[in-house]
Every structure is written in C-alpha cells, then in structure tokens.
Image (cartoon, rainbow, N blue to C red; front, top):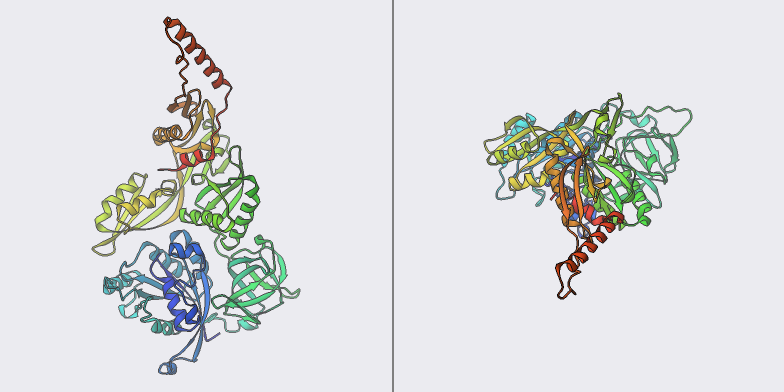
Length: 608
C-alpha cells in the first residue's frame, strides 16, 4: 500500500478537470497515443456533446519517478488511482461519493475565471472528509490568464501560502509532471493509520455501479480491508444479498481483469446479480464466512431529491421499456428517485425526483437516446408538507394530491440558500432577478474588487424552471450559482384548477402562490386558447381557486354561413335559420366532450 495514492480532481464546471486527466493518462502512457482523444474519461455520448462530465470515472495509472528525482522518493514506481468528477451543482452527490473513496483531492481553478461558486462548495466537501487538498491553477498558458490574482483568491479561501499553489496547463501538459510528484509527496498512502488492514477480513465500500448484460451488476469499490479473489463468496451488508465475485479488476481506464484486489486499491467487482436494487451505492461488500462478523463501513448520506416531474410515454407499449430504463439508471445514479403514477389523460408513467434541472434534463435525454423512447414530461415542481386541520401531516409532490383548502391548516415549502458569484458590475441585475422570485437577502461578500458573492434565501420552487437562463442572460454568462437546502417555511399557496368547457382538467392543475394566482391563471388560459383547436361551438376556458373564477378566455366557434343560399325575402327567413343553427350548437356543446391532445399539455406546461 505504501506506493499507492488515491485522489479525486474537483473543480467548478468547465475548469479543465477532464483535460487534466487526459494529460495525466498521456504522460504516464496509460493509453496508447493512437487511442488518445479529448475527454477520454467522458465515455458517454452526452458528455462529449455538452463538454461536461456527468458521471465520475475512476482510472489507475502507473507513474515512474524520473531518475533525477528518485532519491527523494521511497519507491521508483507508484500506482495512482484518479477519480474524475463532475463540476455542475446538480452532480455534487457524485463528487461526495468519490471523495469518500480517496485520501486526497486536487482543487483545480481556472486561471481566467478564478474561484467560482462550486469551487467553494467542493472545498467544503473535501474538508468534511479530512482530505489533503492540493491547490492548482489551470490554463496558465492562456493569454488572459490572471495567475497571481487567482492565487491570491485561493490563499484567501484555503489559508495557504502562494508557494504551495501549483501552476499547470491541462491543454499543453505544462506542470503536470510536477503535480504527479506533489501528489506522491502530500497525499497519504491508503489506510495510513491502519497498516495491518491486509490481514483483516475483506471489506469494501461501493461508490458507483453499472449494469452489464453478461456480468450483472458491476460495483466500483474502494477496498479498505483484506483481499478479494475471483470466485470468492461475498455478501452485501445492507441488503443481506449473497453471491460470489465473478470477476475482479481495475480501471485502466476500461475494465481490466486481475486475479485479486487488495486493501488500498480502487477497482471493480462483477457480482452476477441481475436485480439492480440489490447493489446500493454506499453499501459495504464483505467476505461471506460463517465465523466472520464484519462491521459495515460508514454509509453515504442519502441524497434528497429537490425537483419532481412526471414522465410518461407516448404509447402504452413503451411503458415496460421506460420502467427498465429507470431501474438501470437508478443503479449508477442512486440520487434518482421514481415511483409509478397514472393519469387519465397521459396513461401510466412515473413520478421522478431529481437533484436539479440539469439532472432532470440529462436523465430524460438518456432515456430518449439509449431506449429510443418518446416521452411526455410534466412541468417540474417541488415537494410540499401539508398540515391538515385533523392533525395529519402529508407530503405531496403535485397539485393532483393537494387536499381541499378547508382541510388545510398550513402548507410548508422548501427553501434553499443561494450563493451567486458574479462580476460586481452585474450585482444590481442579479439582485433584481432574485427579489422578483421572493428572495430574502443575506449578505454580499467581495472576493476581489471585481468579483462578489451574493447570498440569498429563496423558495426552491422559484429557481427550478427558468432561473438559470434569466441569470446567465443578465450577467452575460459570467455568474455562477451554488445552492443547498436549508429548511421548510410556511407558504401561502393554493391549488389552481383549470376548467375546459366546464370540466376540470386535473393534469393541468397547479400549486401557485396566492398573490400570483391571477397572473398565472391568465397565462395558462391564454396559452390554452392558442393551443386548442376550434370546434363548432364556443369553448369557455377558466382558471379557478376554490370555486372562484380568477381568469377566463373563450375559444370562439366555427360558424357556417347558413344564410348564404338565401336570395330575397324578408328578415324573418334569415333569423329562422340562425336560430336553428344556434340551437344545434347548444345541443353539441351539451353533449360533446373536449379531447385535449398531449401536445397541448406540453405547450401549456412550458413557462415561456
């Protein structure tokens, strides 16, 4: 174990984590030059398209100390286990899982952008795990790099000396060799406080997992104690599931089969299990022997979804495919929550919980691509806690479950703490956007003369739909956001029903703020009027709260000119035909049932 180092690369989105990983793989000859490509650890097509990391990716590299340096090191060869992590706030859970499997972290900061909101959040995550942090300024080769200024920001954040901060270029490879040597010097060896762990019974922590049709569930693990060989009997302590290790190996960066894994190493175990719910991220894998009792390792904190949306398929035949797709995605993304749901108009589907809007977007896009599904997705919402007059407490996720107003004592909604890092010239615009979303100002901190962090408390429901677009637009794309849930607070919200031709359309009901209900009602009925097709009779479209109509539009009827063939005669002939037409339209309106196509639901649910 003395020549093993385990570390993660953490940074704000687009600060160069994956590019630096590329240079490390290239410098250590882990990947042949002819197979080298940009973002080699971002194996998902969606990651390459968007230029972001969605899934953490572990890889083991062998680093040989240069001859002129080897006297300063205990060994000539070292094995470095690197985990490349996502940078977006929605995937913070991925970062926290990777940090629990390592002893150190490289904190990467873009020399052109400096410290951003997610940089600070990642530092706190690493500190919570008591990791050794190596501060690094990346992209120093760019002409607009502000190396000295950024170093000063890092010193302020970490309380380190400028001489401890390394300079690298993930693009050119400058400084990467020095970084690898610094990793060996500073990051401690695995289990440095427990050097006899090889003699203990096997015990490993699952930090990620995938599904293979032939090998079953493949668990990515960090071995804390003992040794695991191929075909050894194993058990999962949380689910009490027993099986054997069909295959063990390391990431190189693809799965590379080995005969065994030892304490301190990061690798994978193919379990052969076909039920994805039996392998849970955060669970402990242990050796299965009757005479050995193994204590579970500390589990990760279960993530709590903050955004909920319902997902339905266009055709009922695709429902089993949607269910299987969500099950397999849940395996590698334990932050995804879903449960069956059924609506009269949209059919069978699932109510899903996500960590944010990007998380929702990525999951739905993967379902469309990987399983070739045509999806119908409801408008995102948050969870509300309802306290009823009879003393009962209920958590609801959609307006469909909202009880009658007379039965409600109070409603509570989730609030979050927002940290927005922005150039000082945009502070006024940013504050205006948040205050319009019922934000509660806390503080403004100036990192430098040109950049500040604005802190607000704000209802989660006000930032989950179009907040990021509005913020990026008002700051020319220079602002960055981090948020964390803080508490539930009382909310003056009501259920707004939508009626078409006098009949309530449950799927279009929404939970809205009482003082914003009239404006929101006008928006929905106006959109419905523009989306629905006209009939032979007029259709009233209404928004109501507790029986009171707060907004109305009327979709006018088609009118056939029944008097077109009349020539001459007095007025009573025309009136007779028009009266007959009017009576026919009334009979139609009384008997007809309005069918609302799925596309109309989608048009109405869009905010813009």
